[in-house]
Image (cartoon, rainbow, N blue to C red; front, side):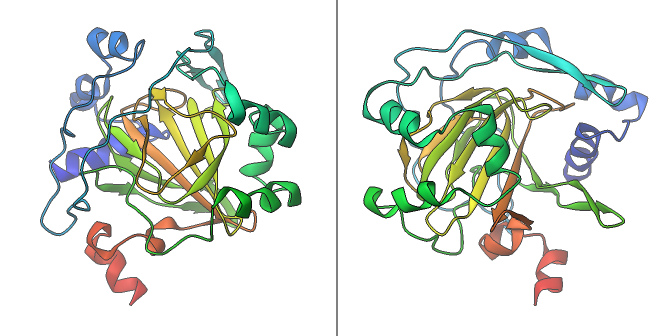
Length: 274
């Protein structure tokens, strides 16, 4: 089972799967229908192993969504690969959080690009202490209960070709915030990421959660560590359900596996970091 998940996750980012695995990678019609509406919470279908058990926390319910933005698909190509960032299942902002996002310029395509490519704006960082958002406390909270590490950062020469880690998760599996944060972006305008949620943390760190089915937070909201914020999915450039997670410090990509509890880190990684 462990090797099957690894093959599937490798296939998600361009490595072709063997013919006998195509039927496992393909998304069924029932799965596509599930992605069109908020998913009822259930225990993750992937059971944690003894060496990588999930943190002992209760499964929180997803925050209520009062209204959804239009169900828009954004399709394009990455090289020769066609993809669709959709269907979009993102909350419609409202209230004080929506006002805060407008004042700070959060939630836009440009804001997302800045958060995942450069240092956060000073005005964004200045707003965090007043919201009770402090620098992250390590280790970070593991984002998928029962999810296992599938693939990490990858390089081609000095160029990063895979900027985060892939964590096993079936469609509809709850996704949790790794630390207190301000929601900086929640939409599907970034090519290849599908439904994408980006959080800004107290020390200027940024976490990103990609290929989601549904997002249950919107720009300007304050999120707490361990809070359920979304459901995993298969949107964007993805050939199988999983969570793609990225971590940045000072605008630079960092390996999040060095910041997670040892219980979630594969043994070969533990040997390297010790």
